[in-house]
Structures are given as C-alpha cells and as structure tokens.
Image (cartoon, rainbow, N blue to C red; front, side):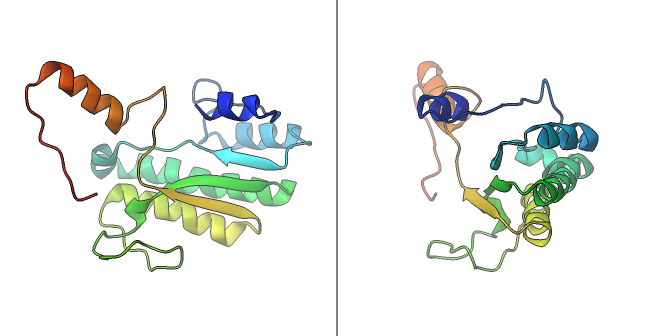
Length: 166
C-alpha cells in the first residue's frame, strides 16, 4: 500500500517483498542496499506480526524483528542511509493512563513486543540517522487488519462484540 502512495508523489523507489527478498538473508539485504547507491532512505515495513504466534515461535520473532533489523541498521550505517522503521506500541505495557511519549520507558508484556523492542534497541545502538514509528494499527487495501475483519464479520454475524478501550 505504501508503494503506490509514494510513487504517486513522484518518489523513485525500489521495493522488495518477502517473495523476492528475505530480511533474514543478511548477505542479500547487504547486496541490495549496496547496489542502491542513490537511495537516501530505507523503509522497513517487514516484521513477524502474528502476535499470538510469537509466543510459541520466539526465536523466529526475534530473528525477524530483532536480528534482521540489527543487520539492516548496520548496513544503513555503513552505506549512509537513513532507516525508517515501523515498530509497535506493544513495546509498552499498556498501563499508562495518558498517551505514551517517545521517551517513555518500555516494558513489553509479550514476545511480540519484546522482539520489536530488540529491533528498536539495535537501531538506536547501530545507527546515527533513523526514524522509529510506533504504530498501533496498520490499515490498507492489502493485508489483514481490523477494518477488514469487522467488515467481514458484519456480513456473517448479527451482533459483534468489540473492545472499546483502545
């Protein structure tokens, strides 16, 4: 969904998906970024986002959301690129009664949040120029998300019970 938006604004980009580049293939990622000599920014939208599955696949979550992001940060540092990284509000424990700020202490309560925090910490440690976007929900034409789920459920159920505290 980000690709058409950026290209419609005249941004020249090269996009990779999990079908043509695995973020965990460190050598392939390095080769791609080394070839992109004109690129100023790297936007990382890749992540292992199946929150419940992260509990039983912690190693995979840490590999994708932590180790691979660390590698990406190191490559961005050596190639002089700025990294724009999508993270999550799951790095917080959710107990604060006011909106979280960038400098609030993190305290993830699950494996997904912990794996995403590993990635954030790696970026902060390895890279001089970066943006970390802690998003709560992602929406778009493609992929699974809350709005699509609700629209689908509305077609098949007479009544929906939905959390109202987020």
